[in-house]
Image (cartoon, rainbow, N blue to C red; front, side, top):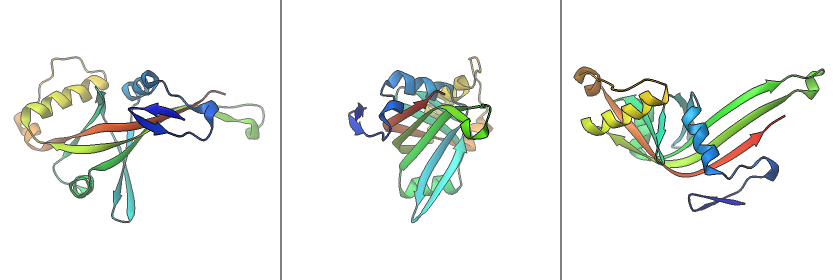
Length: 162
């Protein structure tokens, strides 16, 4: 059992547990895609998203309408997941394994519509994918989007290397 952001976390296979927050944040800074999960009434809903991470918050851009926004407006609780993996092939397929690191976390989503706050969040997302500032955003593009800010409440991390 470890403590992440003040919460107790449990990983069943202790030999795979990573409690170093810098490892988790490194994966958040380097992952290409995040899967964002919601509970839509009694039905789960998950969507892959582009994102950026900074100072305990995840930023995602979005159109102003859609299912994920409808869900967030009813309940701002979200779950997120990022991972890296590589199949390690051996002589026999039954001996194959996967090297992986994964982070799963919980947070609360907030919709950001303020122009200046949107631009700051978009800067985080652009930098995540390697763009070099300064960034320029057209008023037309800004007016058609909003940003989702997810305050990370807790995270767990697992790693398996061959």
